[in-house]
Image (cartoon, rainbow, N blue to C red):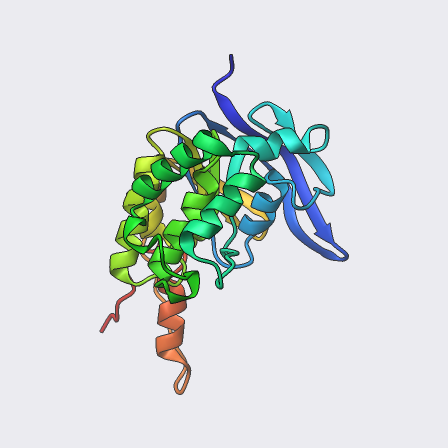
Length: 261
């Protein structure tokens, strides 16, 4: 049996005159934690929506756990848990009610459902808030709850779109540790625009920009290939220097932005 859990071949997606993805191909092996890295608008979310059967590619195809996204979309959905960047939660529900509802939607009931609920609550560390309304939760706990909801049906693959977005440093560390723990048992793809977070969490990195894969390697391999290059930029007087520095610091592969006398 193949160890390839996700196989994307020549994925292209056009929205009218705009090309969001251009001939994207990659594989993800069983047990890998893959970081999908790139700036906003690079094509990360579009790729994830194709893999999860939310949208169809204009060209190309993909298989998830052996199921073709065109020929067997239900098989794809059964094989994976997907957490969108917006983390769609019904905030008027209690945490337990929401998880019970997700279990029913996934076809679980009786002792099987109760067993899975106990497992995911313990695994994601949300036991202290199980009786609270979702609207009362912090962003970190909401992310934990979203991840718990993706795990209920024991999927072989997790796809997480920007799971650290908007978290404070402590919450970021908690979610990073949770993803690493989940990655011991499952194949995980998560997208981010932060190189440092990807390095700390992932076995391998795909870097995408303007809809194209531009690098595919481990963090160490990418550093060796880059050769620790240094670039210099001159800013015009009166420009938004601080804002420009911040944007430069967020680019994939940038380790430090500093003033040079």
